[in-house]
Image: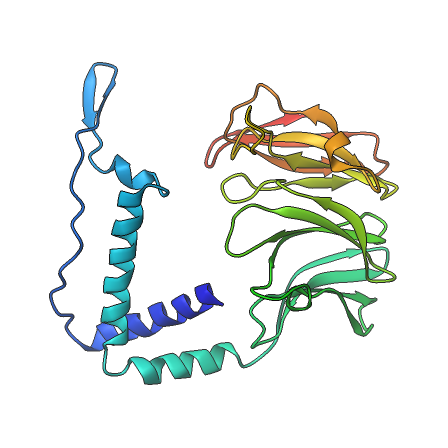
Length: 283
């Protein structure tokens, strides 16, 4: 909901700026650093590299000051309240549905019904079937509900694997729900990806397991944020025992898209070393 409100504020601000001349703003200082890299004999200055460390006190202080300045400017516009109210009313006018997947006669997708802050995972048994809720983030726990990030419907439509993010974190946890009964299975797999390390999953043909991405552990037991690998999980087993499949030794920035054959005998892993580069297909 916080992101939703920021979007509304940005839209309102854009309209306001088209009608009024913005006052001169006093931006928080961003002192340049002395970082210089040498590439093939050429020195390249990178004075603002310190801003890349999002966890540093200096970066956090600068970002907070920038945010405070922007919020003060936006909320200080005379027509802000009326524009915000109008855009918010339009955005809450109807239910939205997205991400349709069909298998085994089941239609699975995400449904967001304002004013709920997060979309629910729902299913229809056929095109004209009544909607049934498989997972409702708002009903899971007190506090901020998790957000559903990725959805993977089994080939026979019997189960759905999906990932959630909690409290704005990019870290994703994988869950599995039975479609017929809308019952959550015991399988909960943490640290399967997220953010710049997207998740990927391919079901087995019998829907009794799947191959999925998993973040490796560091020497101190914490989870790495890159260097993702592929492992296989059998439903009902401890995720700690998932069998390694592929990925060690590849680029730490690797991203996967998985494609399984209809009979489950083969798996294609489309691996790309980050964005905007050619991919390699492994079978």
